[in-house]
Image (cartoon, rainbow, N blue to C red; front, side, top):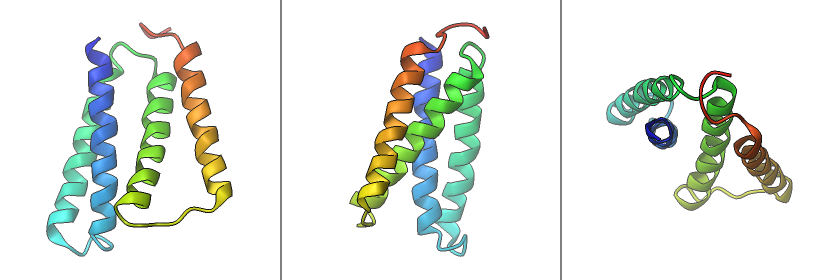
Length: 111
């Protein structure tokens, strides 16, 4: 379904935008700052397209949850940020929430 492709694109763009936000050093570097603005603009547009057929709670739960996990992974691997074991537990709970949302949310329409 095309709505899932839009949602995947929105999540990817959000992760790229969040990475650029870190690289912008408080929005003081031009190109990373432009990347932030463009990625978030396109991410919300893609998410709005997925909302034409998918329920808002389902879309937002996936977008936010997968985005959080993606940002954490990018922080760990690209920026070499460390994690406390309780942070990892929190991420595991987010993943569990995303899985439960995916399994039990209505998949089509606005109902």
